Length: 443
Image 1 (cartoon, helix red, strand yellow):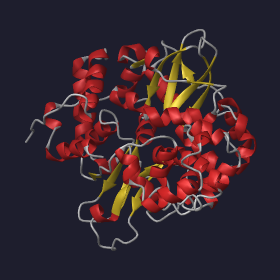
Image 2 (tube, helix red, strand yellow):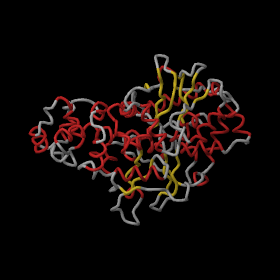
Image 3 (cartoon, one colour):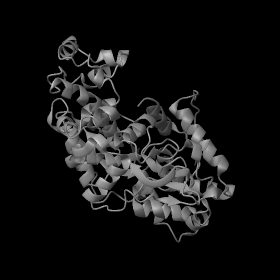
Image 4 (tube, one colour):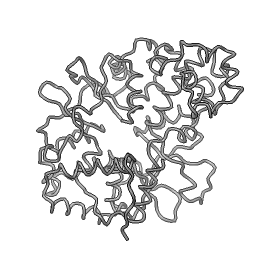
């Protein structure tokens, strides 16, 4: 039976409601068409959605070092993976087997904080010499940067503080800077500290999962409706939804925003898709995010400053712009941070490494030549079908809308595209879905 849930202002749930209400109010689609599509997705079972490539969901054990996890994600060309408890028994329920989802969002947060602490560690000689224990990494890094709130102090032991002060670390004002400035002064030693010094070297996926989780682990059953998945991936802002089979412990599928948009691209030629896809994006109210709200980074800013912006605003990408007119010259994605851990040669001139320098190095160090630096954009009069094709064919998560002068006037994300095809019926707020939303409010 449907039921209501109190929605407090300024909560994640209220923001999701606001986003979705704005989308629905701006769409210029016939009401009957919207209702027909939503009803159709409500009747399609999750089991009908194609499985992951290779047929097996890639999982990462909680005791895997972060550096190794980055390699797994990179080699599989995926952005995230479920994290499994290595101590869980074979017959355990999924609630006991899976601890959450690791993705580049969590990794970027860890790298940023590690950059701050690496400055402290190098000032004292090594992280160990600074008196840092496995449980004090974030706290000492925060203390060295002048953050003395309860969260920072709670993670410190008297021994760690004493050792740090004895080594002149906490008192050294030169390290009381933010991550971009700290890493800018470290050069290639940053890489050595992150992957070769303790406690960084032994930092596991499980440990950062607890501290740097952007979204909850909310699985659906194979017999759930695809509408539930689409709403979780759009209105409720999840980037991926694990699929389980009732009574069995393992994840049987892993549906991402990208996979859904790839699926929509495969629907070209079907009447319902072509009817919507042929419309200009303005008919769908796109872009939902206006020019004044698009967060960008100048090409001459430090690369770690760009990643810091993503961390602070919890976004997965930035347009790279130049000059006061903010002409777009490239795209930077959160997954590009993997090169910080996989390509140590990038740190050889880290003191002066700008966003544009970094993107050029990525191009020369990978087989994705052209994908990183070439701006991927659309025009205000582009069709929805063309935007979907760009997202799917380029395997990207956002397209920037630009005017005739290549100035960014908006951004269209995977979330936005999925939202164009559905609305949320009143009756859909059932017992399971209510649970999912509550989970989101308590990540």
